[in-house]
Image (tube, rainbow, N blue to C red; front, side, top):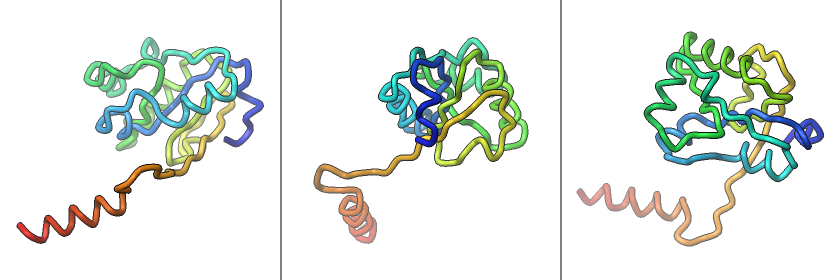
Length: 140
């Protein structure tokens, strides 16, 4: 994370990768892990500040609680995301998305970017599974 000192003892909003949370069914991602590890005082629930397509996402994906899914598949959704982030009463925004949202949104509070890498610990690993899948696909 860049600027981890901005997170310790602060009230944070965590924005995570939208598809990972929604289609991937994950309740959180790297942003939550980093915020907790770095000693955030509180992770703010974004749901009361949501509207538009973001409200619909929370209604559809009930497992989402303390994270804001980064939805932005068009100008309107990007605008909604920006307004929701700016409405949440927090000290800092923790961005756990592949895209650095600071480059595409105008935020009214400090934001930090979490980076992460996949470390595969089990076998078969992703590459092996994909090769197997492609071999089987060729047999059909």
